[in-house]
Image 1: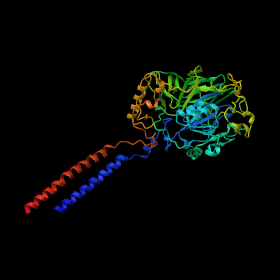
Image 2: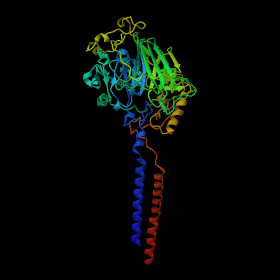
Image 3: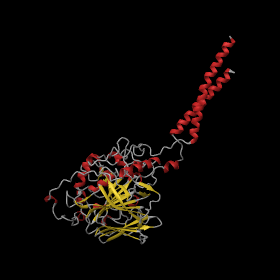
Image 4: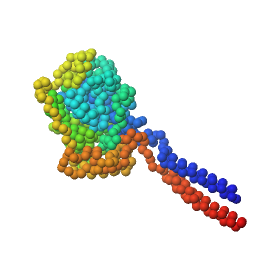
Length: 535
């Protein structure tokens, strides 16, 4: 009897221990189907699924030439966000952001950076990629410590940035480029190989939040028809977007002087389809530091439009300082939801002509033919520290052409004193923005969002004060929230809570432990009584 009871108690103890260990292991490592785990990885720039650990990596912000001689571009259909910004009065440049660097195709042609291009890169905590930069951009890049991969770095033998680029005169099928300035390209393979040698921080900064929220249906309510959108950057540069109703996305057509063509990817002949269009109005004019270049204000507040699925609404944009992302709100103060997919952002002068129409068209069935010769008024590269483009092979006369005749451009830079730009001032949050952001952050946290939850666990909320210099940054003003694993470099898989089955197992285990704890003393008490009675 005694030996049998001991065996029963021993087996019970072993079972309890095994159940407890199993429950602890299961709660820490919940089993999930592979497809479900994969679906939880989300591209923070598009809201679409993304593979591997690319959701946590800093994206690349690549400056792309957008003159007739540089078109068509390579890789543009695979970008996540495309900004269009002016570089001279009559020209624009595209800034393409790529989150999935590992699968990034051949991308080009890569051109020089401007201060506002560097600022756009910084707003996404991205790695800026360019071939040279104007002297104002170089000043800002050094001043703010912007992560920059530059083909024309001053000491190429030390960090070897040039290894992440190549020159490809045949990047456009069936065409050989004669202007060296249009031949610089890179790729995901080159980036993955060399980026670890350039930077120690390849993941998003802890606490960074791009404030981009994505939903399945982002068609704005209460809007007006916008099947076509025409953006006049200048009298010689127009971007026109036409809705493809079946795809609920927009094709982009460009007029650059006499050049007319749809934006197309030279890699595969695919027309990029933009799910979201954002048009942001701001102050643009000759720079106070160098009047041959432009200043573009990207900090503060402004107005604009959001277009999705044939509807447009007015929006407001806000950016607190150079360390902050852009925040987009509707007129009622609520945060703007974007549709999942590719986004186009136009940075236009406040007075720019933007029009909307109801007609529907489609691009040509075949890819537009590229121009035979370079644009007769292509932009100069002499301001971009691009001596290689001027002295290298190919048609150097194209690289030596003067920039367009903008205001004061005829005055030599050497005769003009360079005016030091004032220190950028941080812009306070608009009235009601703080409460709105906090409420939105709490809702996202309640839904278990790992991509978009703000993370600033130690800084108190912003206090109302007229002293702008004493205000914390927009990111610091958020309420204490649990840190996101995607932003801290941990596994991008969202850990799920234990299922009811494992909760039941834990309860049963605890119950058995209590039974064992109560049974053992009683057993030994009975044995002691029996021994006394036998004596």
